[in-house]
Image 1 (cartoon, one colour):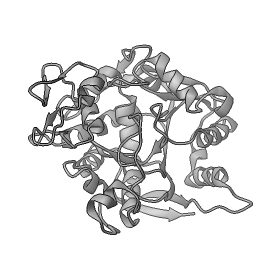
Image 2 (tube, rainbow, N blue to C red; image 1 turned 90 degrees about the vertical axis):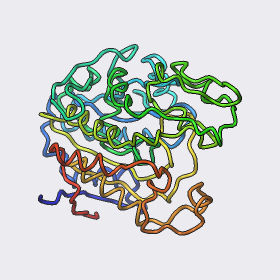
Image 3 (cartoon, one colour; image 1 turned 60 degrees about the vertical axis):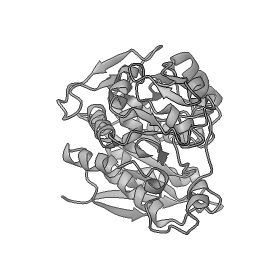
Image 4 (cartoon, rainbow, N blue to C red; image 1 turned 180 degrees about the horizontal axis):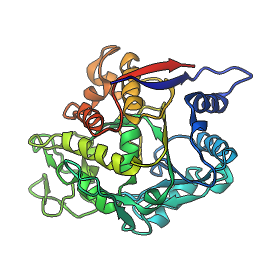
Length: 370
């Protein structure tokens, strides 16, 4: 398969070119102007950041991209779907408040926010793709109805997918609450009884009342558990883990199929911000020290190649000596798969290979540095 081009710019600046200028130059060099935006409803799929988490993309970048899109005649809107788990973004009211709090508002970005799957996460379109894992992904209506999809993705680790990039932001992030249930349904966690301290954090934050403390240990009721992964992310003792009899492979493959449902038949363009590379995603109300130093911004029409290129950039980087990853392994780790070291039970490559198989793009890429 022919290599896809991934364009990349580092974060070095000059008095005549700041990071916003570099972003604009990047997306134009990548070819965003090839898309006909005139009077087209353009969904900018982004993650607004859980209140308390500070690793999300700064709204300044969104504002500059929105300015570019408006000049091209687009009708852009910033969007995301509601979360499956409890928190500050599980319904449209709280979600919009979170977006406002984190700077994604008409004053800062000159663009409106629309929560894609409505007030309670039930507003969706089932898009038939007859996938191997998902026959008709449930996509938030505002995203499903958009004419063009632009994704702005914070590239970082993820406790169930290995890392979060373009595919994760589009596939998982565009799913309605029912869609997220489908995506998570085969990845229910388990409790390691040897390390559980019965602290109750998982009980407090489980949105489905699926966990109780019994005999000084957390116990999961699998009739209630949806596999959302909140307990995995919040456990401070690594006691809530993905069950050994089920890896993340199927979930990553499902994410690829949901991404296909979002993008099929629509012009699309993707930007990954490889900065604040936190070990886990932006969905939690906290973020740990980045596992590597800030690297740069990459863009492509191919989301598969884009994610693969960004994984390789993180691999090449030395580990942040102040991170929990370095504290655990105490070595340089240049050239190693940092995401596999952070989440050893996750097979992120399976998702990229499945995405390639179903025609979303290719893992073969040419990195064009500008």
